Length: 342
Image (cartoon, rainbow, N blue to C red; front, side):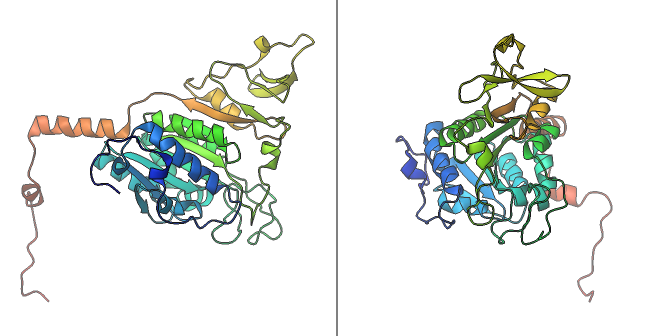
């Protein structure tokens, strides 16, 4: 990778590393990687100012395949490293690549706090509803009753909804997309990159080996189970665009347009609404009784963590001067250990 800013227009090829991806044939990760490499040149950010940080899992091999800076970190701690990177160098574009196991099990606590702090980083969470790297155990997003190698009689745990978790943690940008919709995936990644603050993008991703077809009900060509969100537009879906969503209290109701029901009766999507009550209602639509909302569910503006932190630092320096580390370490009572102490 070049050590100085690149003046020429970058292309997708510039972001492809020399390492061949080691994922199973047909894995949805290939699509996510390809769309990431496609959209990055359009952002106009030099490669040396881009960092990918991952934890552990199939998704976490991602940094090896990007011709940028990258860190393959420890299980669940990628948000912590990404926070430090961003605070230490706010000029960097920082991406966290994680999965439903890495991000929501051992890393669940770290994910929640980076979302509430609103650090200006982008989090892409691959969700295949199973542990793929360790050969098919159930994950925090596996459906109740799911039979796996670690739940031979079916999982007895209630599954996490990553989007609902993100909204509950007051994330300022929350979006949902699917590996099999590459154009939509690329658009969402671009929106996430443009957002100032923490962006959480869940990508429904297929594991062909251990959970094949987990999202077939969403990706079916009849288009009856996916609802593509448009800010300021009523919630209309279906192959013939003849179904919609309206509210009965706080419960979504599916209606067929016509016979006295028009788009004026439907819920209008407002991604900038704050507080996020309606956004949470949308996040509970799961593609079974109601269609699954795909796109940006929430996008609001708030001060970022690093902006406020650096502002406090500047204020402290203005009040008390730059300070001296050696002087601070030797201030007050200190213990001196004699050199002859065993």
